[in-house]
Amino acid sequence: TSMRDIGDKSKRYAQLRQQYDDEHPDDELRTRMTVMNLHERTYSPIQNDAYDIYHCPHVPPPHYPHAWNILEILEHWPPDDTTPRDKVFQGLCVFDYHRDYQKALTYRNAELPFVIQGDPSVHQTVERWNSPGYMEQLMGDVPHRTEYSPNNHFMYWVPPPKNKKINSKALKLRKGLKAAAAPYRVEKPDNWTQPTEMMRLRYADWLLHANVTNDAQLGPDQPHWYYRLIGCGYMSDGKCDTDSSEYLFDELPWFQPRESLLYVVEPSHQRGIHCRFGMKGVIAENHFDGSRNFIALLGGERRYILSHPDQCEKLALYPLEHPSARHSAIDWSDPDLETFPQFSEARANEVVMQAGDVMYLPTNWFHYIISLSLNMQCNTRSGISPETMKYIHQCGF
Image 1 (cartoon, one colour):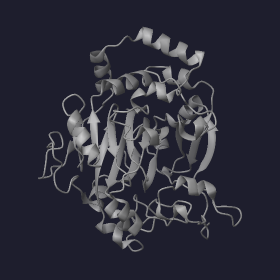
Image 2 (cartoon, helix red, strand yellow):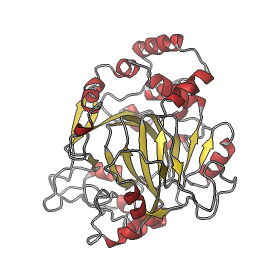
Image 3 (tube, helix red, strand yellow):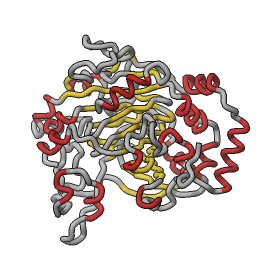
Image 4 (tube, helix red, strand yellow):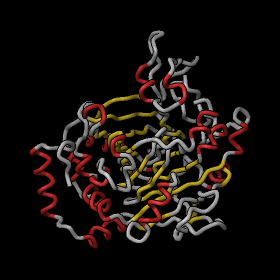
């Protein structure tokens, strides 16, 4: 269902959707089977004694979600290795959309992370986006944000100012952090160079780089590309990005800023819809975001390693003034425990998301992301919950 004042109102988009919908009439069983056929494998959770992740109690268990020592997780499955493991250190509950909807609401309202599966509306998007040729038609020749790295690591960064003025862009991006209301300057550290290169590519051109089937060209020291779409919606009066992808509000109607939707907690505080398409092997470095976040996997697989905000001081973050503030300075692929000994005490859990999965990540939760295959992920943020701010403040933010 489209909204009156946001979304793509163009004739071109209307014709594309009409053609697709005529060829794929609503059929929940067909759509569900299409999504299940995209799953190439299953991952079994390493057992914890507190609860069964597939049959979680209505009342969240104490100390949920279960967490393990981070070095144990990384040694069991090194980040640079995309070869699947049979078992994972998963602490997040997995809810069925039809059976466990009220449970999901309970955990969401308690500001606890979880995964929900089986939403027919999400499945419709997954089926459409994995239909041959649909994404090429959807995006056409419009170039979108693309990030290039000479290796598989993608570290977020804000450009240091060329003069002594306050970096207003950094200030806007870091709203909600302790120092955001006060003047501060992003500093350029000695010997710092930007870790990635920004450009704009058409989807078809990005796919030529990213859709690599030869594993010899996918090693951690090989070039990688990361693609991004932004649907602005009400954010910045719909002008948050050049050639913004407003059709995302029609393609993902379950992320629309409406009342009483599971995935948008505070519709009036939604920060658009953001999609990132990952090449196999891409690693997005560990970081926290200062708002609630619902994340949907629409194709492929992604591995998320998650930590509670109370682990902040152990995760060795760059400080607020650094171009990569709120991101871990330590390389999780090769942890330097002499420089960052506190990292060995950090605790985490992990989950592999597959097409049709949606994850709730509350405010300030840490996440480290590994693309296990070519994948499509979209997320939306809506509002801030204050429960974990004390840990972030203690950490210097």
